[in-house]
Length: 472
Image (cartoon, rainbow, N blue to C red; front, side, top):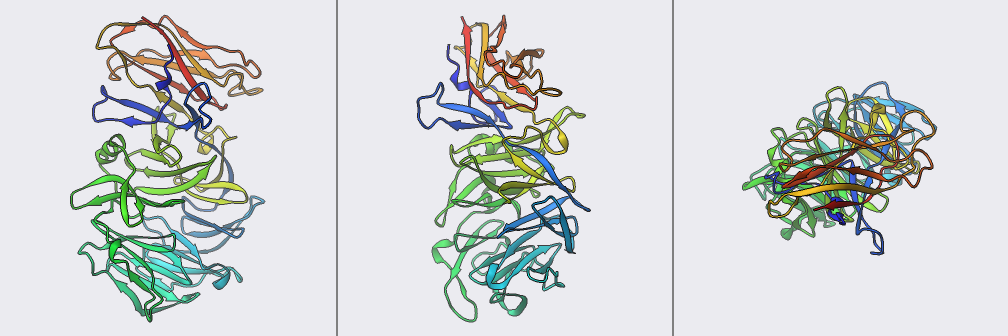
């Protein structure tokens, strides 16, 4: 029988025996011709290769524009070059939050950097980092010639001089008066300023007024705030953030105009709301292979979830800690696209990596362990005897030597809905050129509620097309 539902996203319900599908380091892609072997396939998330090791770490923010790449790593402000070299341009204070970077481009020739409550300017002509130009700020942004800086303690938005990040008039500010909760986060998207509080949010635009050029959009008041200051990202379709309000928290929204549109599902929401620590959540977006991914990582809670706008589905991106034999939150946490490549920073080291579908290892050379847990196979709790399980996948993909020369897939199963598991059973997926390899397991016993789990960790392409069962 065709077990096409084996290919799918992550959906981890409150009740694991109702639904507990997982796609870890695999994401679904729809076959757009609708003529393939299956409607969906599973593709591995891209691996990484190290390009720079900086003097200090970890990476705390990245920015790229017009061929310039600026990174904040530990206390250092660093410029990266395409020949894999770098130069430390200056330093800035450090706190528990990420850094933010933005530029006023050719008009001003400056990059505004916030970190540790400080705002500094990197002059792109002289390559000199200024002293502190604005204090007590957490985030920066740029719109229509002005840098913006948010002070969350006083719920104040500071505005720089026009095309001049060195000038900040203390009277050139906007103080929140639309809600009692303080602004916690700042994001500029599609020429709108989004200011997120803990329970509600505002949207401002450039009204061309003086002396303050920005005004609130009356219809832009949103009765959803943000879960954690950096639990937001600017996707190609607009802001995405993990919401929080006076009624609860843990729903992921995307701005649909000025209306928060829910894009998470109950499975993702249950996981987020079960985390004991959420205030360190960090989000970032990227476009790869035509998929618009928005990822949210919870470093303390050890979870990382990615939303795919192309399929409106969710999957997990996790780091496999081999010594601890467990998954942890993803290590790549900051992203920019430069030099024709996706560059990512490691949240736990001083390394900067290039991310690519041609790479099959995780940070530090760790295995990129892909896991797929199937939906339940049941028939009104009657016995089902499984004679044969076959994976339809790319085979004959082994490396010429070393790790991956004889790649394997591991299968195990649960007969109680995912509560306990069988021993591991291994099958070849084909040495290099062995394209006719059949990835197959036989005599798999019987169960009333069967769940299958497949794991592949060899550094080879891991593309799953379908699964087939012979059952009675």
